[in-house]
Image (tube, rainbow, N blue to C red; front, side, top):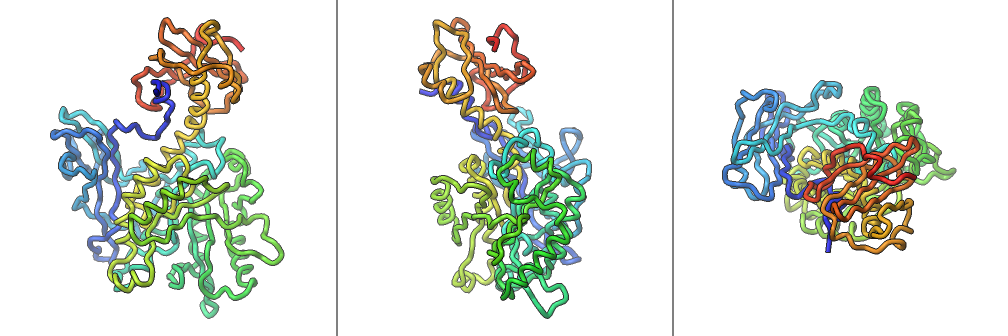
Length: 514
């Protein structure tokens, strides 16, 4: 039977009783501007376990928290939409020019607020970009490796178009609608690149989508990456040169491509010998680009290249098949090192012939909401890289950021469950339990009497943990000792929300001395 502490230590990024709200942009386009730019619909998404008839959601074009007189663009009643999704009539043109990652606010001009029937704000959000999220949450992830965090990315990243009306079949050529630079500004950190070699052209190397050549040169992509890196020191970018579907007939063509990549970005390369180190050590090296290259060179792989990144690619063209595929993938141990979940649907030749008007936008529209659910609620603990099509139609970037902030607590919450389930000796309530699995052998589980407890926040690895039992007061205290012998803890009542912890100093009489 689970105890209150078991519930608290089950550190999920989201409390299932909390109301969540977020904005996405439809993968489908609605109209075109006079300049031919694609326009898409703004979408409102929410999770509310117990919504009431009087609950409302308002959408604004200014922040209502700081502009209380702001009138909403629209008002809707979530109870009428049990799917937790509403596509508005608000049209948003795609950003063809480069965004400004240095702008004061990350919000992109639209806000949504959830009010309960009493008019109290339950949740609020905006359509936002995350240009420096790794730096912003660095205190949470600095001690983790890259393969221990969730990294949002795009599939066929260089196959983007924002101003061309598609004709039959060409809708299958493009997977994205934003430039590589703007993808990075929004928060993506993994980029799946396919390159074709075209000998008779001036640029030679172009981004392909399989055998289809785009208008984007590899040089233009590298220039955009370099431009973004000038604004940031801690955002780690992964360029995965995964496939070479056209023109790569000799190794010399690969070598020339590597020379191009190295000439543009070589100063930023993270060598493969740092693959097993922490983000903090990578930041100390002043390097922030990983180049993964899927080719075996005759004389061995250069030290600055990372090997091909394994990927879980379902090759499915319907939602249920992809769902079943990921259920199987995440039921097994995940690969060691970096690996990618390719969370998009893939048409086969017959599907394309039977549905010439559909295109990848339609397929992304079908799957993106499911992808948000899968990686927010089901696979967040195991997922590493998550790559999607038309990524603004899902919430994976925010899910990754919030999940990564919980990773540190999750790691030590698991250890604390071990300590807690090994009950404190009643005849010796002041006990020191050393870091390690020996704790379980020294104590027997029985935590049913504890209603209030103290759980540590874990910004760093713990050398020792104190547990102090005071059964008369229905209390357990957990304290940590650091090098400076200061003790910090979090106080949580038994009915507290999962993992929402208020930080305080533990009094010395509440912990034993070490």
